[in-house]
Structure formats: structure tokens, C-alpha cells
Image (cartoon, rainbow, N blue to C red):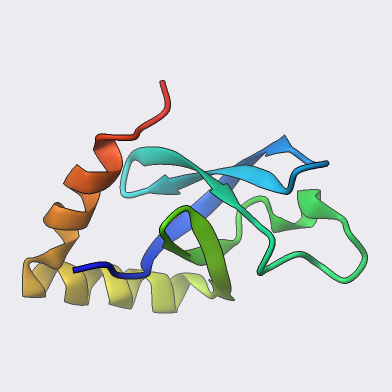
Length: 93
């Protein structure tokens, strides 16, 4: 199953291409920020923000409380580990 999984934006990798490094429960993944770009274009303002990540794209910004609730629910459903394992297969080192 493909899910949007919460991750925290930790670094802008390529501002021109709108790429960032996101930490998803300890797994770091490069994602495209195209769907969550700030109106003023200041990508650095996104560092520290939480987002729902789906197939390499940051789909929407969420607050930390919603991120934690979502991670807990996914863990309860047994989906979190499956998604993390899939992300680890393409993890950046």
C-alpha cells in the first residue's frame, strides 16, 4: 500500500530544482517540494517543517502534532514499518 508518511524537512539539497532532504522516522530521503513551495520562494523557511511524503514528493505541510498522530496510527496499523522498509531501499547515504 502506498501512503503519505510524515517526514521533517531537514535540508534544502537543490533550491533550483526544489529538492530537500526529509527525515522520516530516522530514514533520510530526497523529496521534491513542488507541491509545498512557499509563495515567496524562500525554501529555507521550510526547514524544520513537517510534510506528508508520497512517492518522492512532499504533498502537503502538516504540523508536528498531526505528524506524530499519523505516525502512531500507521505504527498501530502495522503500515509504518512496511513504508520505512520501502524507503530504506532508496535511502541516501
